Image (cartoon, rainbow, N blue to C red; front, side, top):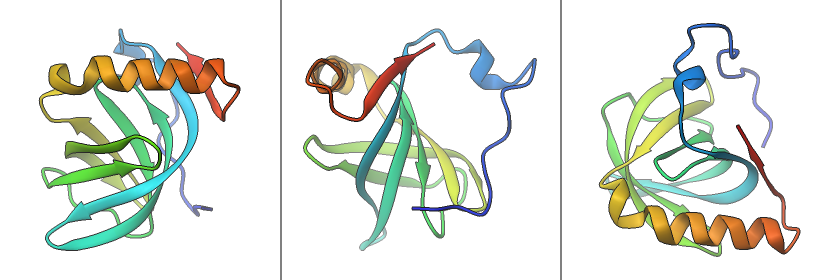
Length: 119
């Protein structure tokens, strides 16, 4: 999925600079499911607590939804911020899903699939 707009850069003081959790740059496909509708998404960055999602028409900040990830399953999410063609989401009740998600991501990386751990 190509986007005409990219998320804000990682300049000093940017919230992503304060992340303590390992992030994985990924090329994952999925769906954002909200209000009875499904929207195709590409997930570009994911951690145990959230993700950066590219999609044509992202929902507004504060929206709740479900993020379905191909080969993994569904996660309840809240949209934390949205821009043109992307949104940052937080996994609702992340502690419940974190271990299973991170184990799956590590296995994807170990098997040489398109996911790379970054800090």
